[in-house]
Length: 76
Image (cartoon, rainbow, N blue to C red; front, side, top):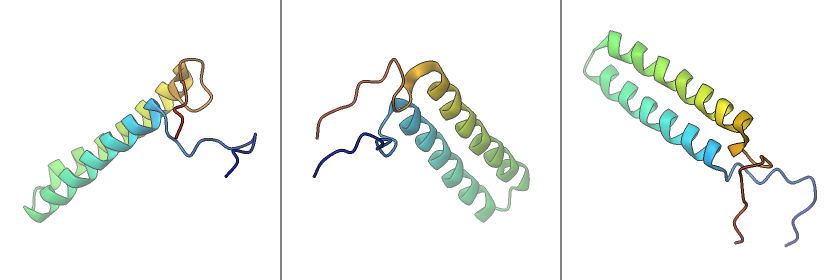
């Protein structure tokens, strides 16, 4: 299968992986805190979810996203 020139790489970058891991942890903790009826910590988890989004965006702007200056794509 060829790799067309406009292919964004499907997010296989340090920025994408970091954002997804932070948001996955936030979602898992939010679910756990919801189950234990701890609303303050559920909202804190929602805040961590937003932090994950901002970290991914910031890393992408710093060059660690797909097509960034500090990103080197891996061959499959």
